[in-house]
Image 1 (cartoon, rainbow, N blue to C red):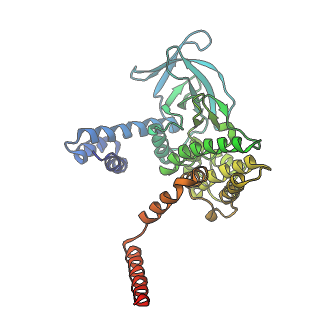
Image 2: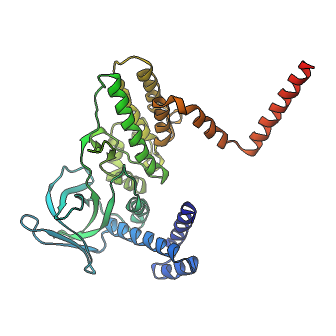
Length: 366
């Protein structure tokens, strides 16, 4: 089974289903998927995720309920139909990040701790639909460098329905911020940044932007793997509603110069590239030698004032850093990538040039 092809087909049917009234969506999915039960199940999962994300943002109804006393008892998070999502304990309020009221939670069993984020901004149905498409994508992302969005919906804690996202809590030491003190330390940090680029590229591949790539939002786990502490919900809301509080906050975050000028809908992965490049510049500090000098050149390109001169995505930045760390194997990989991008016309032109050169050399040798 071609997983990429099947996922593209599922996404296509899901998008078409959203253009139909809710009452007719399931019938359309049945018709479009035919006898392919696996495809139908994937589309229905996408629709369920979308509905949860939409409910979390419109807050027109309560989809989940929390029972128990957080100070002395466990708290059960259940759907309105009675399905238990998880049993946890509210373990203290975390710093407010401007858009979400955040609470730490922990489970009584071996399941990982999570962060309960209550969305402050209530959205209209039309606005929420646009945001929900991004949130739905976050709900099904599965990458070792990204925290999982475990659940989304609404709860009523006595203030009316409030949108929530239950996000896997990522723990570890924050990514270093100051200059590296040695070449070995710089190499180790650049290796960590390539892992960060891989995680951010997963967002960029799905058309999402993180928007707040500061060292405090990236941690190094005990395993040594670099992970983001949040999947980037703020830009999804800001992109859908350019005049919202989320958009204002996104514009006020220091970083790429276009943040304060362009509408959030015009921002792309190059604002994340800028943030990573600025961090790389600080890491290089006053170090000298081939490695820091090459890293400094990469950082300057990543932080170019004209975003057209930057790497287009975190993946492109990560490839350059990987080639810096592993120059031996970079040449053949680069040549292969360049060859793969040749169009048939370009290939034909190259063959013609090669033939002409061969003919000329042959004539000279005669």
